[in-house]
Image (spheres, one colour):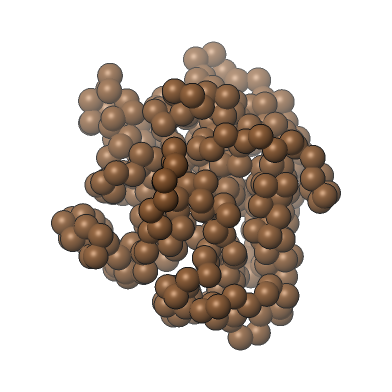
Length: 339
């Protein structure tokens, strides 16, 4: 069982096995570097996923722990959409953290792969079916393209019916939508409560989401400002991971944890909300959603999944990636994460 922390409510019935309620199987991937650097976080993740019959695998070869940022995005039909990852916050002094996702192995078999032709952060695409929320930083990352062309490439590659462009959080060097919002249904979204931090941003963000026809729920947002190269993600609850039967919610041992748990449990009544102790990861700049990459596929095809070596078509732009803090830890650890 996960140890109860101050101000954290452990959901009633936690520990009960909840089988995957759909005909799709979900596998969650993390970097092999995650456990040696953040053992408690990893133990909480493994236990929560195991209790809900969701497989957890580790990928070797990543130069850091932020799989979400460079791994291809799986769209509504199972096709994977790749992109070029070349973040401005890694270009000076941190290029050694950029991972070429093709070299991260073993990867699941990609039945089909398309490239969007954009410089992009995977954490900046919050996808729900044929709808996506992206911050306007995507325009800054593609200065040679018009805004209209950037939007077209996103819509075409992700096969979107709805693309919602939201403002960046002031001072956020990452510009990732997954640190601001999370889907709670096809027409329901969660957003950080920015009222105390930035009332103008709060109003603009909420207005944009509501104009898109979405129901909006505000969740606690109590950022912890620490000195360092990258801003801490402590106090961010929107960076959660939603899976079949379970929601993994980051908690930080602060008073806001309880409010966040109550709010998320009320929203996801059909899923169990499990707290994941995330302070150590968050201090590096990201959280639960940032370090994970979930793949879904139908049970009937599960046996067909294998490691890959992709021969890409001419003209494909290889994506690259990872981010944030220098890693001096070795790849070795006291846990066996072999796939």
